[in-house]
Image (tube, rainbow, N blue to C red):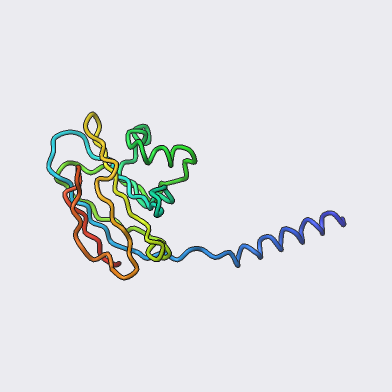
Length: 162
């Protein structure tokens, strides 16, 4: 009986301490991606947060739900493939050539102060992969309220505070 009371007390304390765990605040941005016109399969798109050294910190969004093709996005796969966190809540269908998609990105507030980078990677089956189709350096003195041109499958990305 004594062991049960001790285990119960430890469990209650552990659960109670979870209430005090801070979750990082995020800033929501509407993100509209417009792809260039092309023939072929839909594009896979990954939006990641990188640190100041270009190392992956977090996957913010994935367009393309067929995980068998994720390894085609080679740089991101090196990060995601090791840990395979659940990305169901931040993923959607591929984007066909000429189409646009709007999603909400939840960017950690601290990323702006740390001058981190948003990287947009794109790949189309049996065609090119663009590791840095678009990179946006986050700056605490500037808001993401602009249009940014891509260099690969992305024609442009427009960001607006949500």
